Length: 109
Image (cartoon, rainbow, N blue to C red; front, side):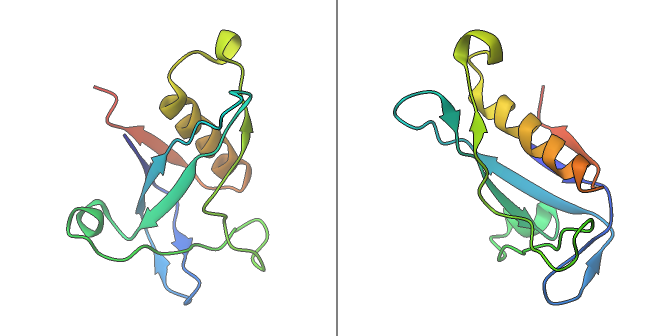
């Protein structure tokens, strides 16, 4: 699964990318009341596949900040379901949307 970012984003080095590609890793802490996804952005899916370095992108709603690479979301297995990876993708997608960045979750089939 991945996030295809369809809004132009600007890297911390000032380069604007029309689209980009992000991988999300789900970490489930011991107590099970939160999840800690890591958000890793690449210039493209090919950049990820070829082992290129990651990029950091600027928050367009607050250009003086960088979008974090780690998030923390409250989690309840009974109400949020057992698929923590999907839960993390949806949480990061919602956070990006709040910043004005659109994305699509890929790899659902």
